[in-house]
Length: 205
Image 1 (tube, helix red, strand yellow):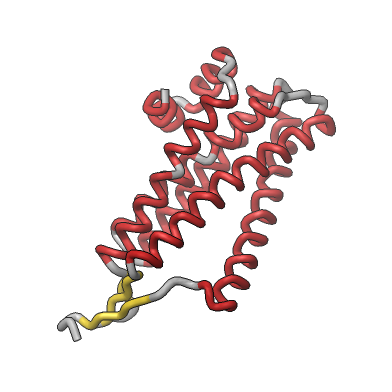
Image 2 (cartoon, helix red, strand yellow):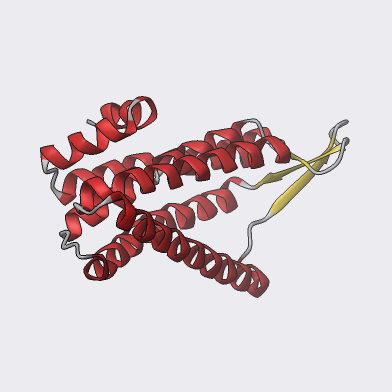
């Protein structure tokens, strides 16, 4: 089912949303999907920061220590899953404003599947050049937003006009949650809980 969704949301997103709606997947199916797909950014970031390295200048590369990277990706993994759960709660909480009454399972499924391109975009970290990573990340964000806009009317059983406003509200909530998470991360790092870096020159010095 995971492979089907990954393929379907890229090739025929509206049809895949209809499949999700008609199949009445329970929340455990959506949770399993998130638990598996959230591993993609965690593994990619670990490989990128520990084994590939990031170029700070033409001659200097930065790496994370394995233990520091493991701590970082563990926190990231928990944050991604928590973020999906919180946004799903907001989907359900806001639904009455738009004359909709989804279950938490439907709300969780909407957020979980719409987040797929964002999670997949972290594959770009395997080619760790900032401009490339930024470009792939923007594509992932854009497609996740598109999936959200296309999925809300189908899963929430509302018109496309109301669905557009509903989805726009959810995008705003997502941005607020992202900024709050970023601020919390900065606070943690400034408190001495940031990762440990290793810098190497091209000649290995």
